[in-house]
Each structure stands twice: as structure tokens, then as C-alpha cells.
Image: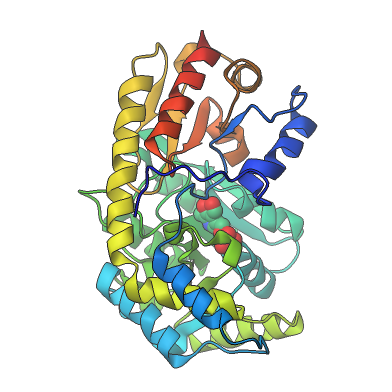
Length: 392
Ligand SMILES: Cc1ncc(COP(=O)(O)O)c(C=O)c1O
């Protein structure tokens, strides 16, 4: 575990380091882009825990990669992880598997809503939460979160108003991306009660659950009061936690047998399989032996955030909103008076830094930027210098 080590990721078919140049060129006035430092999409520049590479290498020793299934040992590893880290008992029969959290959400929306139905989420939020419903011809209903001391808070009155209009499903981001909020038990309970009252399917995306900083505790939605009376489906993964996005592995936890049967039916209708053989080997390994790596990684990223906070908060009009969870940091630049277009131009052409514009997370994100700090401290320092240069 050496989180300071720099790995050259260019020319590794990396979305973050290679493909981003094309994307930026298509959208902004950037000619080449190879001198731009990417601190955007949510994957890490850290090597995965050694247990992952060891488990995959071991599987590679057998030269046949035929059809496979997820073993009971692997399910036990998943079950024990959630018990150990989140005090959440998951019945193995509740588990379903998918290639990613985003496709899992798409499958769930497809299964339980019809074209024209209202699918709600609270913004700013991970863009697929409103893009998937729109792409499936559902109506995406956005209810804005309130900016607060806690980074963001729910406006439950507004949410209830939206639910009254006939919302079919609500997508929750817990912990929250991009704000990094760890929702309280009270908030989750209120949300569950509203979903029960208006018969709304609650899709709880908990992919950022494992990277939680000292003083905060993630609460799985399915463990709160009356969760068994609501229609809740949790979607999660070890891929953010351990930097395995390229392996493609997500977990659906659906205790309700009736709902589960319907998801299986949609998966079958599309011929969707569970994880591939290498993903299963890697995931089982981290869930059995990844604790130490994760604890050390959280400590490391927390120091990266300290650095960013100290340096950027010195800049006039810039405020770093310290996340309670995740390595993604939300930066408020509203007081600079700079427009998003100008900010992005400055960052990309003057600073040579690629971070995310706030409106990617809906209009409620205007005036904010999201930076990814899952990288060596030296990269954070370089990013800070580039950020400062962009603002000069
Ligand atoms: C809230 C949230 N859900 C899902 C994903 C992506 O999940 P997957 O790669 O498993 O589709 C991300 C990635 O950043 C995310 O932030």
C-alpha cells in the first residue's frame, strides 16, 4: 500500500486519462488536451489492493474461461462485509447481481415504471439519476436539496409536494454524490415514511457507502425503521471502494421476493448475465481481505482533502465543502461571480485542469465544481497549483 506512488495511466485505455481529451475537445475550446491534468471521473489513481491482483492471477492459472456463476463463498464474503462494515444483515436470497450500478438502476426503472411515469430525485445529483428516466421516456422530476451547514439538507415539504403529483419511483444517493453528505437516520426514516405514504418505489444507490470519514456513519436504507413496510431496492458495489470500475460488478439487494422476481424477469428479457469470472474473483477477494487497504485509503484521502481545503479556502470567493463521505469534493465558487462557461474555459485553457462543472449534476449545481481526490498527494498539489493559476 503506497498511495503516494504515481502510476502512468496514459495509454491504458483509461476514460479518465485518455478518452477524456476527445470529450473535452468536443465540448470546449481545447485543441489537444494532452497537457491537461484529469481530476474528474470517479475512479482512483491508486493501485487496487494486492489481494485483487492475486485472486485474478490465480484464476488466470486455469486456462478455461467458460460460463460461470457466483459461488456461495462469494455471497458469504459479500454478506460478511456488510455485516462487518455496516452492521447490516443481508439475506443471501435477497442478492441479485448486475454489471454496474447504473445499468442496475436502468433495469429497475424499466421494470417498475412505464413511459410517461414520474421518476424523482433530489438535485444536484449524479446525472444518470435524471438521465436514465429521460432516456427511457419517463418524466424526470427534480426536487432541489437545500444548501446548509450540513452541505445539503432535504426539503421534505417540497419532496412531498412532488410525491403528491404521482411519483412512481425515487432515486436516492446515499451517501450523496456530489455533495458527500452522509444522510442521518432521521432523514432516511422521513424519506422511507414518505415513500410508504405515497407508494413510491425507493431505489437507494449506496455505491459510496464504504468511504466515510471519521465522525460519520453510513446507514443502509434497508436497515431503518419501517424499511420492511416500504418498497426499497438497494443498489451498490465494491467498485468505488476498491477502484474496480473496469471489472464491472454491482449488487442489488432486494428483500421483497415479488419485486425480486420482476427484476429477474427483466434481466432475463435482456439476456443479462451476472458478473464475469474475473470480476467475481476480485470482488470476493476484497470483501474477504480488503479492510486494511480501505482503512488506509480513507486516511490518505482525508489528508488530501485537508490540503485542498487549506489551500483553496485561501482564494477569494472559493469555499471547499468538506465531504463526509467519498473522495469527491464539491467546491462552491458562486462568490467569485465567474460564470460556469468562463470557469471551465479558465480551468481547461489557463490552468490545464479537468474537473467537473456543477451543472452536470443538474442546474442546482450551478456555481460549483467537483474534484476527485483519489490520487497521490503530489497530484493534489499539482491540481491546486493549476486551480490557482486558472483564477489568476
Ligand atoms: C452515485 C453513483 N452511482 C453509480 C455510479 C457508477 O456505478 P457503476 O460504474 O457501477 O455503473 C457512480 C459513479 O461515480 C456514482 O457516483
